[in-house]
Structure formats: structure tokens, C-alpha cells
Picture 1 (cartoon, rainbow, N blue to C red):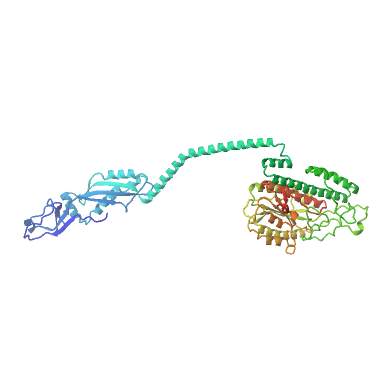
Picture 2: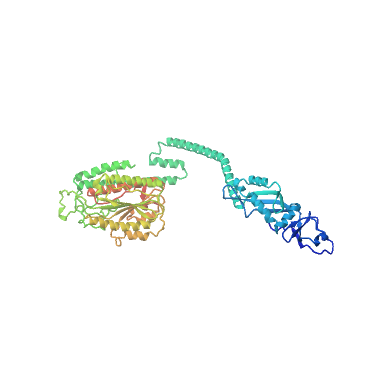
Length: 602
């Protein structure tokens, strides 16, 4: 409602002395007279004659507009609330009203109201009050029909107005309309999703059937290929021939493979030859065999080893290491045993051993006068010190690799727990390397009651954090073990990485602080192992000796490489402990299966 509607067209006093004709009125106006006491009279809307005005008691003349009025109003200040009590209806009413005859004109003058719209508006609000509670916000049409029924019949108000011709329009207000649109959109998406479910499900089923067929055909083809190549893929030469058949344009590559196979066999044979020689020498030193039988037995066994590794006949005879004037079965000339110290240094072996020995206490001390030609060497004294071994394993590898390493740790734990004599001389610590380096097993003597370390898959790979943690641990652990009255050998670290470190090459300073004996008296000997995307230069740089840096073959998948590393760690730790128990103080390692020295990798 905008402009007020006044139904009093004119208001004037009634003249007491008429000097002319009475003022006429327009046809749509009704004349109403009022006394000073408030009495109202309408002479059928006609004005009084001059003679009637002379002694009339009426003092005021009103001209009341009798024409119909049409207006439209929005019930904004008094909205109708829906059945949920939260949302509102917006109601618009178009209506007509007029003065209800002569009697209505009298009542309107008697009411003395300046504007007719508030009267009509109040009537409509009262008529519609509470009607919205019967309808949900979605049923605006039902409310509209109900309101039209309520105001369908004309109504005469006490103020003399007749209200008629009402037409009501109802709809949700803007906030409720947004709510309904959201519900409709959700229903539409639900219906569309339900309609698309069947074809999508069909696509998935058909795709799964096609994948199953492809897998079946692949399995069948693999089986046929395996059957056809069963007789050719059992040896290295057969694999090379198969490669040459399938890649006839790469004869140079096949030739290089053959050369590498021959080199690998030669290296393996040489390693076995050196091991056999060391075994026979140890047997001679302990008086288990006679010197005259040594060469014959070595030739027999190394010939068997040569044939087992793909060679023909016996391997070339190896020259026994020079031991001065001592007989072959006499113990080598060694230095006196040093006092227990975590920073003891190794004594370089006289022969070309597979790897440098770690610092260990001397178990046999032969004086110059003990080199009698026919006196047998005494048995080595039992080792009572402790070897500190640290396994640093990359926990950023995939779960399959971590599973292989975890099985290797479990096997190592079982082996040490089942060999108390070995566990007595070995202290084991397991560290998990990622963005940070965490303890998985603090340095401990492994026994049946020792918990097995558990690796946790994590992101990141920081060599700097690992080397700083090792530097802190080795010094502290060596001090603790020495306080127990035990001689401490220089620690040994097996470091496994599967990729590039997060800090690039910034880890070299931390590695130098760890490995430099001038800075770290307990500087360990480090064996570096690289799988996956590990860098050759990094693996070679962190190992103490070139012989201690190994890389997996490029064609070997990381899970298989991790499996080989797990077996290597188990065997290396257990064999080292058994060697110490048996009086063998040197530490040597051979590459894990499928690995080569980093310096040999092109």
C-alpha cells in the first residue's frame, strides 16, 4: 500500500443564512451532515435546501466519495508462516472496496478515519491470520486456494466499507524459494544419477569382463611362452641366446651380456677361491690338516666351486698370503691386543682380501721366539668384547619392499635369539630413515625376550638426519658398553637407501662428521646398499671402502632387491657374530645376490 485513500472529498460548515441556491454535488458524492454533538444524518445523499439550512441543527457538511476503489497489497509485515515454523509465504492481495450506500456514508463520517487502506489491510490480515500453519512451504498453491475461499464473498465492515473482489496470490518468500530450488536441484540430480546408474553399471561390468579376458589371454600366452622356452631359459647362456633371437639387431648388446656373465663368474670364482683358501689356512693354523694336504684339497674343492659357477675344470691356483718365516699352519704375525676402546683401528691384511677388516681385538699374539718349525699354534682365545651393529633402513620405500625388509628383520631376530653365543657378542640397533630418523630397536643384545623391530612406511629421505643420529648414537652406545667392562669394536653400519635424498648433496658435511675419526672417535665402518633410484655416486661416497658400496642391478625390481638385501643383512650379521665367537676377528662382506660393487656399475 502506497498512497493513502481518503473517501471524504470535501468538508465545509453549513451556512446559517442562505442567500442563494444550495451548492450542488457530483453524482458519485453523497452529502452527509453532522451536528455539533456528533449526530450524523444522510438525506439519501442529497444536500439540504436553503430553507432547511436556516434553522438547521447541523453544523458540518461532508461530501463522501462513493466510487469503487481497486488496490493491491503485499502482506510483508505480517507474513504467513508455513507448517514447519521456519519458512514464510509471500502473500499478494488484489481487492476492491467502496462506501456501502447511504448508511455506509454515515458510518464512514462517524468513524472519522482519514485513510481507508489501513482498515481494509487490517481486515485482510485478521482474516488470513494463522492460515499458513496448515500448509507446507512446498504447497503454496494450496494456501492460495484456501485464502481465495476465505475472501470470496463481499464483506461490509463496521466503518461502512464494503470489501469485495479479492484475488490472492501466494508463493514462498525469497529465502524459502532458494531452499525449495536447492531441494528440487537435489531431486533432479538424484533422478539423473539413478537414470545413469544402469548404463554406468553396465560399462563397469563390461569393462571387468574385458579385463578378465585380457588377463586370461595374457596368462595363456605366458604359459605357452614358458613351455616353449622351458629348455632355453635355465642358464645364463640360454637367456642370452633368447635375447639375441628376440632382438636380432642388438648383437652388440648380447655380446656385452656374455662378457658380463663371464666377468661375474670369474669374480665369483675368485671370491670362492679366496674363501676356500682362508678356510684351509684357518684349518691349518688349528692343526686340523697337514701342510702337505693343503694344496691338493684346495684344488679339489675349488674345482668343484668352479664347475658350480659355470666354469670348466679347476680354478687357477691362488697363492697363499706371505707370512714371513712362519709355516702355512702357523698363526699370522699380529700386534698385541689393544685396550678396550671404541675407536680402535683395523690392521690391514697382508693378502688381497675381499674387503678390509674392521677394528677388532687381537685374539692370537705370537712372539718372535714362537716360530718353531714344528710347534702347533694354540687355539684362539674366546672373544669377550662387543660388536656394535647398526641397520639404517629406508622407510620411504613402497610397502612391498618394506614387507621384504620386515621379514628379513624378523628372521635376523629369530637367528640371534636362537644362538645365544652369537647374540652375546653382538649389539644390534635398527633405525628407520625418512624425513626424520627414528629408533625401531635401540642398541640391545637380542634374545628371546627382545622385541622385534617394526618398520613404518613414511615419506621423505634425509641422509643428514640419519648421519647426525648415528654420530650421536655411536658415541653414546660405545661409552655405555665400555662401562660394562667390555672391549668395544669399531661400530659397523649397514645403510640402505632407495632413492635420492631430499637435501641433494648437502648431506656430505654430516657424513664427514660421522666418518672422520678426528671428529668422531667412534667413527663406524659403513656398508652402503642402493636399490631403486639410489645414486651410484652417493652410495660409493658414503661407504667406508669401495668394497663396501653395492648397487642392485638396473634390471632388478625393487621388491626383489629388498628381498636380497634382507637375506644379506641376516647372513652378514649372524656370520660376523659366529666369526667372533670362533676367534675370527675380521669383517668381510660379499655383494648381495643381484648386486654389484658401485665402482663397477657403468
